[in-house]
Length: 85
Image 1 (cartoon, rainbow, N blue to C red):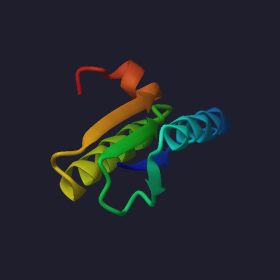
Image 2 (cartoon, one colour):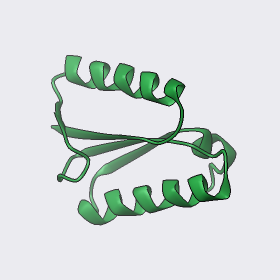
Image 3 (cartoon, helix red, strand yellow):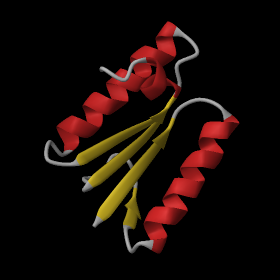
């Protein structure tokens, strides 16, 4: 299984993404660049501004286009502020 990660926002998000990558790696996932086709995409989002909200949505759509059958996990501020999206 292949997993790709994208971090948007603050140092806390960067740290959390590194931790998640380690957990996936420990479970045997191959970590690949976000632009590559993966089975799982983890997007750690930001929601400080409207621009960061828009960028979060764009990254989510990009992952969906890269592999429509992939599992896309959205974490971070945007996921908490706009869970219905």
